[in-house]
Image (cartoon, rainbow, N blue to C red; front, side, top):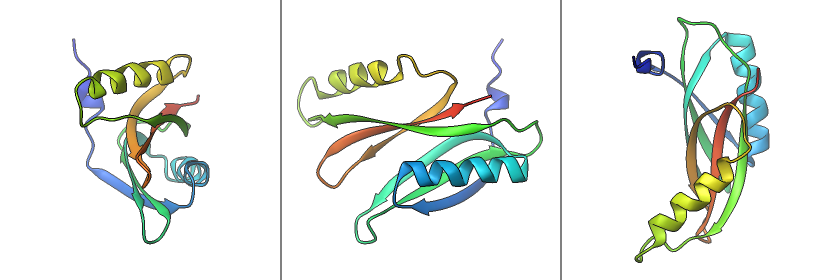
Length: 124
């Protein structure tokens, strides 16, 4: 039986910062103080501001749990040509190997075209 209903959410909180590490600390504090149950993430690099804009999707009708972000650099991947998506799938799987408690992930592409995957992890 699927438990997807537990992933569905309608609440969002936005953050911005200069690194995944600083945003991770802010999210951990928000979850702890608000009692939010984190469900999803969105992240984008804002070129002009040289900042990251981040959104956290969450629920408030279930118990909270501690979370953290973990970023893994994937390097440059040419997704425009044949084989690029297969390579992306492979490096994503390798990046996730050994990381416990992955709730979800988001891809971040730097202005230079390098990929980073950001995992939202349950740390409890």
